[in-house]
Image 1 (spheres, rainbow, N blue to C red):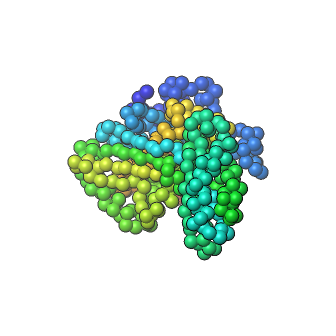
Image 2: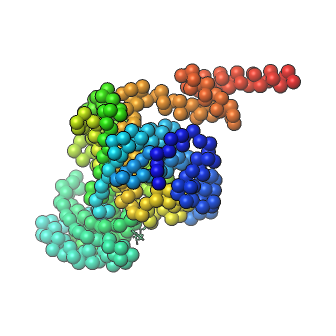
Image 3: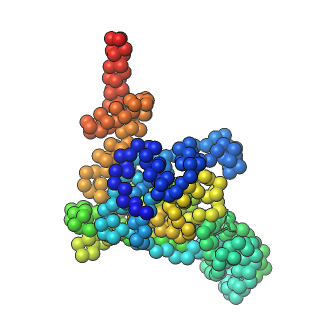
Length: 424
Ligand code: NAD
């Protein structure tokens, strides 16, 4: 499979879908699902509460990605224009530096059990650690599937917290969740070990819940943007932008949002819990004062970008099987493990951050963005059918993409139309 697909963006909708159908060996039913949208009304009623309908989001394909020497076409679900174009462009430029490389840890999640009201907290801590094997055994009784797959509770850690409500013992249950996101699996295990922990400590357990700050389940991804490809000015500009984000949380929040544009889009297309990923990413970025998720450095005149963040993603469990589009997205990616999905998402986050910074240190972000956003502006102004394209193209050509200009152009079009009808 080759993700180097020049002209993919210029294809008509059907041709584009057919290209992906060929690449990913999609069935007619799957391509039809992509055309008509995923979760049906009745299924939605089984998924959440008080259902009245469903909503849809566009899915586009990011091209040019090569990760660990393997090419991917990446489905991204997002309502914001220019994110997919930006990711693809950054990937195209990175391709000339060898593409992306990514590594990840084992899928180890942390479950937290909060214990309060302990008389001798140091002794209680010792008791928990001395009986770690028993705690793991109790936890592992809950999930024979996970155990069969080589996962399950693997470790117990403790810490004592001084809080405004007094001292607390916090027990961390480390669970290898294999290809699941893991929240349900971990929460069940935490609840099941709580009575035994109360017995060991003489305290009372309160919260028993997964931590989204998944520091033991992280991905690191890297790309090199060569000076000969992107130019010395762009590299210099990006290093300045990076220094700005490192020094200023106001800038850093937006910088990191740029990474999450791409990561969330991959999460949504594959049916993952993007709130969990968001929470983990920002908490991780804030561990030592809020910092950029992507670091940049100069190596032999080239720009090296590295992203590192927690990546609690699943390809089983949650709603990954209930949502037909999520299954199709995983098929398009052609992946077999949650780790591979996490590595892909991190690369997309890195690409989106690079692309946003590159745009800002060259033309400014609005030039390209507003061109791609022009169709939405035309629709906001009330344009329909082919008028959307006509108004959007005119605004893009004029370099004036605004609702007021779209309204004027629409009025002009309607006047021309009336004149034509009047003449006939
Ligand atoms: P789950 O319980 O639906 O599925 C996971 C289970 O699938 C495992 O326990 C295992 O028994 C089985 N399984 C089969 N094949 C597997 C494989 N190859 N690898 C791993 N497990 C396999 O889902 P989950 O992943 O435990 O929980 C995810 C859901 O929890 C998401 O929908 C998320 O939104 C929700 N959630 C999140 C939070 C949070 O992030 N704070 C809290 C509560 C719930």
